[in-house]
Image (cartoon, rainbow, N blue to C red; front, side, top):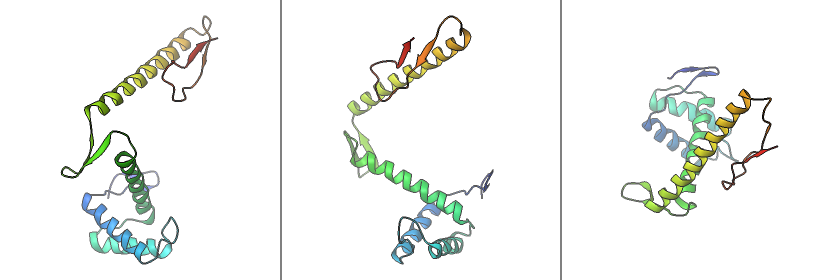
Length: 154
């Protein structure tokens, strides 16, 4: 199965298992066993039973729910990258998200600024903890503004 965690054993999902799981989920949706945003009891029972029959792996409802939630997050990220992010496209031959050199240059600039700000925060945190009697710094959290470092001397 996988490594042990506090709540139990983590599932080991291979690519073929994910495809089977998705096919089974589609089948249960078509059967009406997902009346709202979640599968009903019958849907989960069918999923676990049919998954065991097709893969030989006995995953419980929690393990399958965790995989469902992770796949949903991945799908939302992919959808956002493919459709909403300016400057990105879809390469149907490679089946990957395509980005121009300009897009990457802009993202790397943002990453450098974020890393610089984190470095400054770490240095100031270290400095404040070493010299508490000499300086008092007031921390102001950043809210999407990279124009200032977010720190003020008080």
